[in-house]
Amino acid sequence: DGRIKEAQTDPLVAHVIENVIGVYKDDTLIYSRDEQKIMIRMADEIKAEIKDFTPNNEKLWNLLYPNWREIIKDVTVHLVVGLPKNYDALALEDERGNPAMVYDMGNWIIYQNMNLRDVVRNLLTHELAHLCNYVSFPKLKELSLMGYQEKLNAISFDEGCAHLLSFENKDISSVDWQEEKFEK
Image (cartoon, rainbow, N blue to C red):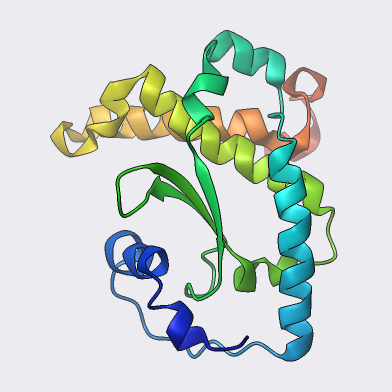
């Protein structure tokens, strides 16, 4: 209803701002009535896609994470408004330590003319791959205990898996990796 300051005091939003994003310049977030209507429409579409979620590259998911359905069953996706600009999707532990994803609908306005089904599936595939990596390879969560080289390897592995599994919403076996655009 346009009361952004009130939304930012919601326990989950406040937790994300204080413990995940950290200190930031307090942008004044103002959304027009039309933008609010767009956010409501998009939130409805996102909810429908979440209910029917199947990851991109499901065959590969089944090989990498045979118990992925069990791993993700307790993940909650929160649709919020009030995060700073550019924070459209975050995977984190909520204020109670449970696995969660946060989608800020104000930051999703940029996707309004895209196929939301593809955007949601891609982001869910990417972020849930991180969660599956942390369960399958628990040492990935111990970055603060790692030296530089080990930390670089862990981050590269984790991000590499997440990006590969969600790459362009395609089955990765259909991608021509020899294409000129990849040489750059």
